[in-house]
Amino acid sequence: MGEDVQAYVKSCLICQMDKTERKKAAGLLQPLPILERPWENISMDFITGFPKVRDFKSVFVVVDRFSKYVVFIPAPHACPVEEAAKLLGSELKFSTANHPQTDGQTERINALLEEYLRHYVIATQKNWVDLMDIAQLCYNLQRSSAPGMSPFKLAIGEMFDEARDSLEKAARRMKKYADRDRRLLEFQVAYMLKLPERLKLHPTFHVSFLKPYHEDLDAEMVQTKRAPPLVMKQFDREIEKILDHRTMRHSRKNRRTDFLVQWKRTSEAEATWERDVTLWQFETAV
Image (cartoon, rainbow, N blue to C red; front, side, top):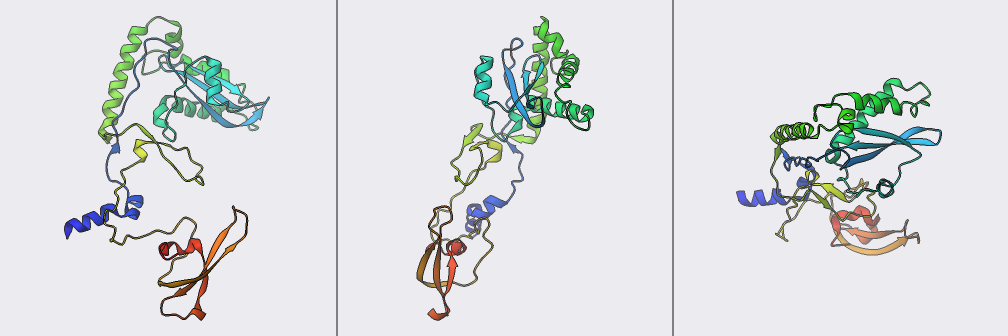
C-alpha cells in the first residue's frame, strides 16, 4: 500500500505543478573559458525604457569579457541583436532566456549604470545621454577585482599573463562558493519547449526552471484535475447525459460552444446550458 501511495503522489499532476522542490539548485556552475587577450569575446545587451532625448531612448552596453572594459552607446531603439552583431563584425551566440546568470557580467554592469544615473540625472531626466561618457570613464578607471587591475590599464597594456592568472583564480573561487548551493544534474544547459500559442513567452528555458514529469501509468487511477486558467466554476454533481449543444458567435476568435446538460437525479426539464470551458471536469462526457 505504501508503494501505491508514493506512486500516486509522485504522478499527481497538481502536486508536480504546485509543490516546491526542497533541493539545491539544479546543475553545477559552469564558468566560461578564460580568454587570451582583450576584445576576443564581448557580451552585449540593451537597456530600454529611457525618456526620449535627441532621438535616443536606449543604451547599447558592450563589455569585454577579458579586461572588463565597458562601452555605453546611446541608441534610438533596441536594435535586433543580429543586426548589432553584423555591424560589429562578430559571431553571435545567444544567452539563455529568463536566466540572467548566463550573462551575469553584463547584467551587473546594467545595474551599476542604472544606479549611477539615478544619482546624477536631473528632475526632468533629460541629461542621461550626457552622462554616458562620464559613467564609462569612471567605471573603466576603477580597479576590477577579477583581473586585479583597471579595465582601462588592461585594455591598452600588455599584462595579459598576470590578468589571466587572476581571472582563473576568480573563476575557481566563484565556482567553489556557487556549487555549495547546487547539485549535480545530468541535463542539457537549456531546453526549447513547445508552448501553447496563447502564451507569449520565449520557448527556451534554463534547466534550473525545469523538473522531470512523472506520468501516471495506471490508466484506471482517478487523478485530481485542475480548472483551466480564468475558469472560476466547478461542479459537485455528475452528468447524466448531454441533450443538445449550440455554437455562439461565428468568428473564430470569439466562438464558443454551449451544452445542454441533464444532471444525475434530475429530469430533462431541469437541464441547464453550460459553457464548454466550465465542463472541464467532464472531458469524456462532453
